[in-house]
Image 1 (spheres, rainbow, N blue to C red):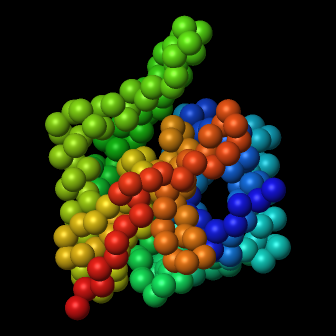
Image 2: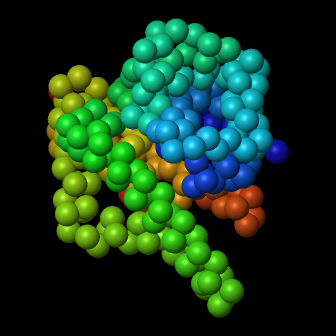
Length: 265
């Protein structure tokens, strides 16, 4: 049985890497139906191909599942990120039912406009030092491997999942400062583009929050750790959902994740 949403945004699946939670992503896509599906960058990790080719059958199944949705009438928009930036040269083209764009403006059912982009163009490290960004990507994947081993031990001891990278994002001062600055810069871009908010990915940190100028910042998260997506209900309300592997269910987050929109004058 499928759960229906008007729109769904997923980003940072990093297909082609061992860190991709491909089983969860496949199950999520199989259990969700939507009118528009946005692929918000770093869907296929072409960076990783530099150090060796990794492409299991399950990753092909996910690609075929997306193409099948497109053939069945779902509008699929692919906005490449920095890890799949080679696809940016094809922006404006249409392949097998998938529109490739550098960015898009999405209007919710209740009339609010959101600029949709990956977000790496507002990351100073990626923009000015791609070599350092690549090294950082390799280090992040190593961190994920360590974290998987750590959680295997926790599981044997009867404890739940714990994310080391999420802990660092919330506790390390420089990282917290970067996240705040990243959101601030994107709120400025929303003000500049005269839209109500921004929908992005890139930093692997799912969030919905009100920012300066009455703008709404939305980050759909990732599929290497959090297994989250941003969704639009038929009413136009935006929310974050996470795929719960154990029960194969969607969990919608509460609290601050149902924003009160404020249209700028």
